[in-house]
Image (cartoon, rainbow, N blue to C red):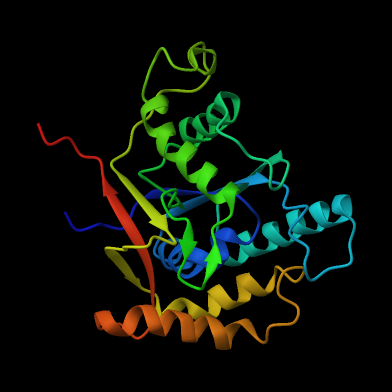
Length: 238
């Protein structure tokens, strides 16, 4: 089934900058068309400092400020931080419950996250363990968010409600099958990526290399610039 623009969508990412890098133009495209977009960042990102001299605590604080600025550029309605240690994520039921909490809070039609099945990324880098853990937990949260007896302490008495939704889009997928034409939104993506100054101070203007990347994705599919995803359609078949 073709994917329609969601009315409400949620991105679940391991680190500050993951959303902007992977699907910032799609995020801006949808919010510009009236969708409500939400961002959940799991870690503090305090160890992602190959290009900064900041200590971990200062880096974490700066990366949160950078993420808030980038979310504003993309038109996000809300951005939240779970504050977990960078590089130390494991499959954890408490963390799963926190993701479920925000799905039940924001009630999205679609969730976007890391593809947890990918080990080797197309740009010749080993996928971050945090990416795979967050992707797996975000997928498992679908079953949990709809169940009345799963994390029941979140429900009832004026608290949250159960929630289900029909679609996931997974970024950095090795076999993408959904491509968003983002030709008109690459400037917004570049502006959002540039907010993450602690991460990209020495690799050239984001607009140049991001456009080359998006062109390599889009042009084989008849689009000037695109972002790629794996689409999971969870509509019942029986």
